[in-house]
Length: 332
Image (cartoon, helix red, strand yellow):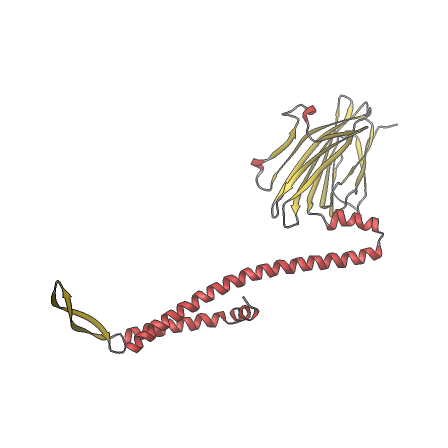
């Protein structure tokens, strides 16, 4: 389909419809007003079985045969216009979609090239490579991140239940895999166990995929567990389809052995995230303190004697997070 044809159809398709309707009206008018005629009888001779027979035939002849031919032509021309217009509109729609996709790719490439050119001038290559891999080339981002800390005293020891929840959004045009990763220490001072790792498509909690649940399995059967020295790591790939949102939920339990007075811990993000919320619950008689490592200050939402809540609306980059403490008020 040529550019002239596309432009003509796009500009004059309404007029084409009007002309088509006028042609149909003209054809119908001709049929109504000039369709009179007469039945003409004729005799023809047929030779059959060595004899000749005379057979009568009848033919309807219009009084204005030219106008009848004209009405048929107008009908055919009008239908041809409608069919041609429909085909051209379908082709134009497909071409527009292809052109839009090409334009989007050009814009993305232009933006990336401009962005790369500016950053290559302003920052060292090592830093730009990190930005490129973690942000510019990211196919999946995390949104509406929630960290819930529940501190409890069990058997004279402080216990921290961490619940991590967030949404996975695929910002690319194809299926992508997001790596879930959680690293924790295994030392003489702490004991960590994974309680569950599960996710589901947004709005479809009944079809939750359970990667692991301690209530159903012995922890020794936890898949994707890697050990290195004093550290252990849980890893799992999660497939995220474009235009779908995955809700992930992870929970762990950390026991601070022979310690009920004071702890100092940290929690860092392993992927680029947008929108963050922290809820902390702890026994009365304790104090909770937090040091953010973000680009802006946290917004306190709740500040009770046994509960705190913070929000952060900006972006959290890989490696950013918080340091926090929980201490008993009666420490001497």
